[in-house]
Length: 216
Image (cartoon, rainbow, N blue to C red; front, side, top):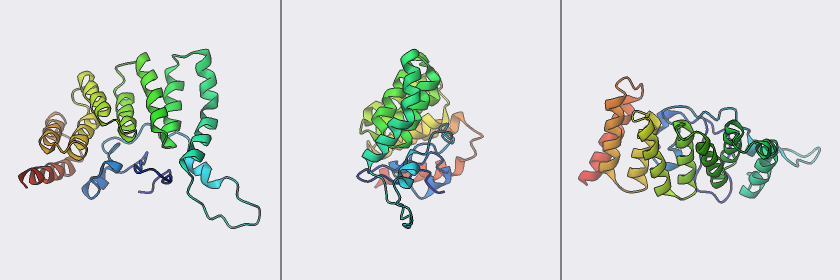
């Protein structure tokens, strides 16, 4: 599955907004963690990095599509988010504008900015589990693993069967905390509470791999 946004220079975490869950079978790193079970609700978010690729190509010169830097992506994200920021000056509790701004910055790998806007949206609607799991992913990519785990735990208080929260909770426990037992517990709860999960074989495979790692 192609990534809608190219990898930015000097960043170690690539995140694809429409990442196919099946990649979990072969790519278990946290870089392809979020969005396996449910496709990202940010499907309409602006392709900030794609715009960066197309910028400033001289007339008559071949397009070599250079990889944008994080700073270039930040500048484009700021520009694209500007109308939303203006709306928020009129109504700071406009949840739609807050979440749209968050997705703009997330698409540009500006994860801390995205987390801030997701957090403001949660102040308006704390029970929005989708927004909370999005915030968790941004916190993880910002380097705040414990914060990401806390958000996922909070999501499960509102929606104990939420598939994305349970899956991501297991991934972070396993890969970021080296807690294979905790990961297995989360995934077993995922299967127990979602008996018709269409990706059940993938989750079962991951459980087996985590258990083998514990045995070693």
